[in-house]
Length: 509
Image (cartoon, rainbow, N blue to C red; front, side, top):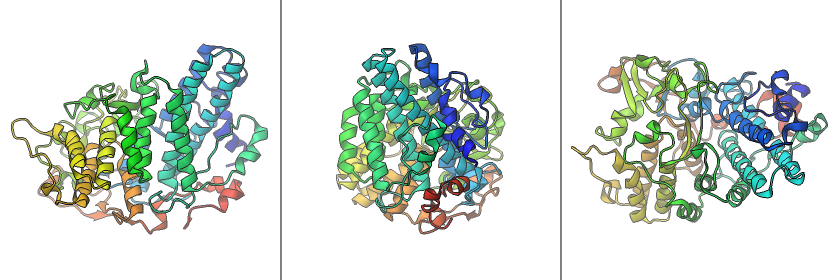
């Protein structure tokens, strides 16, 4: 990565923001709204803000957009395939699935570059909003609302970096965390200083995330967005804090944040509803897609996860590991409504617009917030509330005619540890094919509650539907937490260019 190319990745592409995302190596396509005029009227500023969301959804991958980094389809698949409950069936994500990444492999490099590219766009916008407010183009209220959105997206980005490239808070808050970039690189003269920013600690990184979320909560004075769950809101910032504080083992903090928004959302009665109506009562924050902004076969969850029987590519399917698990009730409606059987296996039915490609990316659902609170109660040994909250999510998966029993303390082993185990298993079912599994593996392995990445069905070995019932399948690809590969490396090009980061590369690379 040459200096000028790095400048384009973290700076130049952010100089010229428009609704359409731009290729990091294509200067012409990135010059739709020059920074000199981008903040001169409200309409252009709206386009700039839309461009940031578009960058979050479409991202960057090996010199191309439309591949779903850092928060589109590709990031969902990465979060699933670093775990054991979704199965890799093709070369596309085999590096991720088999833990074979290096400092030069594209999937992990795409996340690093895409996330820091997005963060720099955010920093550029924050600078531009200051100028727009000072010149009277925006009122303080308008500017503050946009600032709140940018702080939310920066916090979301920094946490994604932490769970992939740093050891978890639950292990060692003093370990190496993120490169906390808060200064906009929008001029070549700023690149050298930007390269010299060292990694902060994990603690400092989480502190920065909470600062951004607290600012977002304060600035986004209303919890309602005309754009629905597709724009950051005050309540979305609060919901994200329940996730962050769960990773920080701040159980009281999780519950305090939950209490702020417990009346703002409602779990849908049907387990299917959140994926039929993307603006359902439990949709907190999602990224919106369309057949224009999410084209082709490689940037839509419906294509990648969709059953071949419906025209999907079926590159990622449900693993026999979770399908055959004793804890997932056979009558659970998440089996019948949210999966599809095909001769080659079982596929997710959460993303249904194969060919249209306008399924949203559900980044925060209220079901997660409820289960975050359930776990916080369990960690505080309040098993009564923990089970009540757990059953709120689980019981809607009952079939009316032949319902399974709600959980009680005895069914969960009679101890807080048993209740916690039930919650973690419920998270595996509820968020299957939503990319949340890796975040749980990361924090739980760091805490010592699981030994690392669990064993998976051997890649390219599950080819028949019978392997989900009477047939057998082999397993492989476990990864102990003590293994250096548990966290991804900083990309080679970055450390070659940046001597500060070269000295802070993750161990083993």
